[in-house]
Length: 417
Image 1 (tube, rainbow, N blue to C red):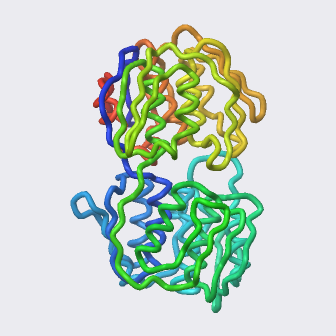
Image 2 (cartoon, rainbow, N blue to C red; image 1 turned 30 degrees about the horizontal axis):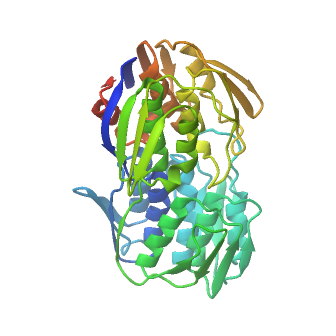
Image 3 (tube, rainbow, N blue to C red; image 1 turned 45 degrees about the horizontal axis):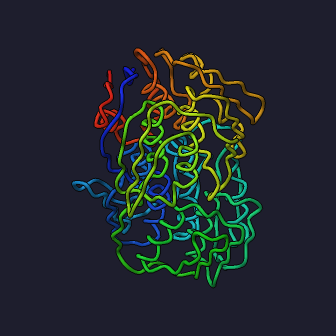
């Protein structure tokens, strides 16, 4: 099995361009099937989740593949409305295809999705918004059969600002008659990127970034070219790695606004941070201090995806930092692996307390999930000795080439196949 081996303890320094956002490109790939024409995506990261989406598109009858640095999808030949179980199980985000297939064909059949085991993430909200638009849903033998002879726009109030349910509702509403208004919608930047892509195809969507999004039911009418937004969680990972190990990094193709809660926490911990149009620079001496409690929340609050990453950066800080995980109940599965490296972390329910230790020691660890794997990269960069990270297929779901990127910053790191 493949492992990432990193020998930490040295300073990191350099410049990196941030890859395209996983959480943006996956709903965009689902949206490509709304229009029976061609889509060209630039800045699309080469991730295992992206390849899983490509396999789903091809199963549906679309043509999808890489042409140089661009990912090209032709949804004209699409002829199927079902997704088999083995493709659905490859990633949690596969459920986003449901709304798009319904909007295109008025019928869809799929099973429940897979992905990281972060506790219950029911798709009940997804199904509820589709029912309100007029879809009929039937579950049998672990399969969902969905039909919608006539979907009609209406006002839909989400009980919580779920990102996935918001995206599924937007995609389905593109195939509904009349206007759909989503109230208490998720505000994540990736939803804004989806809106930009849909508008490029000729859809009428407005309000992304606010809690109210309006979709005028209209099938897209034109081919689209789109550049995927930068990945704010990948950017946070490299900032945290340099903060923990010490050194200096400049990130290009990044949004300061999207990272404001993360950079505020790192600044409070003692890092010097500056930013400008499309760039962020961070400098750290590697000796951080504890910060005020970190509570995860929907955007624009502190992102749950960055919780493990910031925790890893603070393992050698002076003092104790309290983390409160308000989104997923199993977001602390990485803690036992960090303890193998000498971390002092206590956990009770949704609360974790990180008490800084003088030093971390390299150890054999394994990824428990995508962001937990990223936390191990951050801790490994700051630890003394060799850290061997196993089960790296989790990391490959969201990071294009972490070995390449950390090596560009001067890390002693390599992939062992």
